[in-house]
Amino acid sequence: MNFYKVVTGLNKGNGRGFKMGGQKMNSYDLKNFTDLEVAVLYFILSSGSEEKPVTSAKITKKIGLVPKDVRDVIHSLREKQVQVCSGCRGYYIAENNMQVTKTIRHLRSRSNKINKVADALHNSIQ
Image (cartoon, rainbow, N blue to C red; front, side):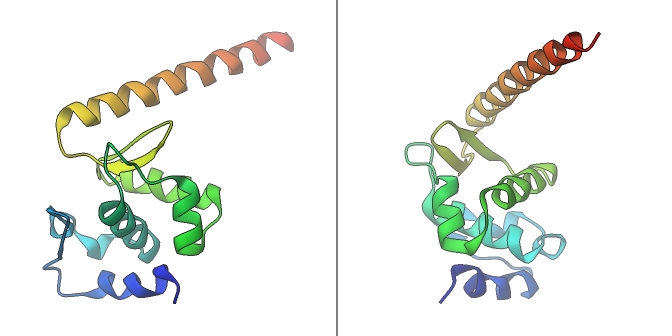
């Protein structure tokens, strides 16, 4: 059975959430999450940690998404202030502020590199 199908019912539950590996899903208002967001969040909570983050490839295989959809769901979760951390090895949910700060630095570094490339391309057409 597809993992996504297993967890989609959680989104419509009683809102009390459930406990997974010491971390609580009930700290999130799941009523405002899509089924895909719930599935990805659940999978990261149940399988990922800073020491062993969940790769995008594992999420795509387990839930049945394409890599771009995984990135879009992660983006959406972060916009909803879910502390999805990442590095070059994968995704995990923050257990402390230092992990969030590390991810913020990683994201800003990537953003700066992208902006430099965009500036270079822009300069090439002037």
